[in-house]
Length: 431
Image (cartoon, rainbow, N blue to C red; front, side, top):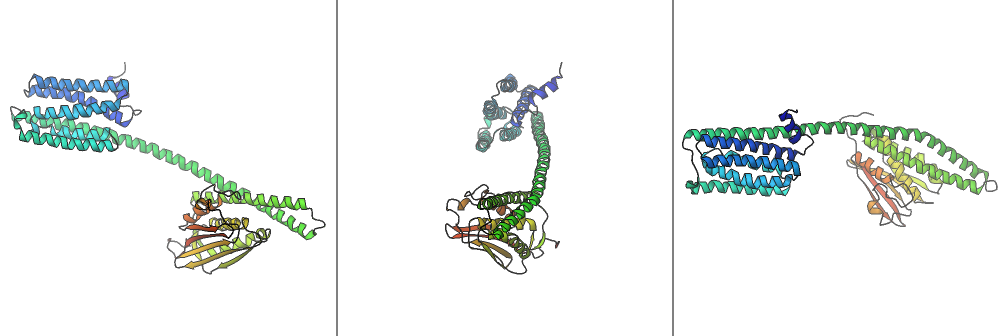
């Protein structure tokens, strides 16, 4: 046969039960013991048969509540009965029967308020505990104004026994409650830490997969793109009499899809870099911007576009250079996709401790419906993947900057982003 104490623990104090349920069960079991103890103390102190029966009745009610709650699962109802019958009925009655505020029943009022705060939640706990405070204060005042309502112990020994027993009971009950609460909190915290470690490992694995896959895809995409552009240039040199219009169109479509896939790969790299929080270093933003512009000149020529740059000297930032390069490439490619036979302007200038980079085009612009959510992931007018600007925003903000966009349909789009100037403020000058 199972050990009785272990059976009680497994049934009423199991970790599988909600904390408030366990707390109520502890309270109810304490109520059984307290009722029996109070009955015995009343008998010792000469409180009469009535007070002895009252203690046994309280013990019986506590046992009935824990049994009913266990069988029915209606713990909220049992919480309410406990507060109304025990805390607001039985405890004040004991207060008047056992010495008033000269006795030790004041500790029971503290016990009642603490347990009420544990059992209830939300606004209800504030309402009920506030009511209890006023109610118990009223009980004290009534006992003071009507001293004949209080039954006094016949000797000082009775007050001593009552005060010590109440002190011990309430102290032990509250201590056990707090210990149980802290043990449960520590157990949950350990589980949370384990889950966080697991999630961190999963996230790191996902980031490494994205980064590795993106890097592996970038090289063949670059080779394919360069070869397609060379073939297109050869066809152009061959002249109209030899060039096959259908082949040229197919190559143009292929190049367009390659660039779209390249943007998606760039987005994966951007996301991986942001997620991994790669180490930043001192970088020359001007060199970075000029390199990005040189890389895209051939692409821009295909739609008759050209890129004009106005980049100040001495623009130093503390950054992940690859990440910022991807931002600039994305913005110029976006401008190129909405512009034909026109000029795209790239400007970078310092104003105090901030560098502002601007990409401006005179293209088709962005519709008013799309503009407010243009940085949302997946937002697109159908010309792109809808992830480029979202990743640009994440990358710029991860460097402590801001990005915003101005656009008017038919008149073009201007994208601005800012970065803090590097002035040694990051505690290092690694290059």
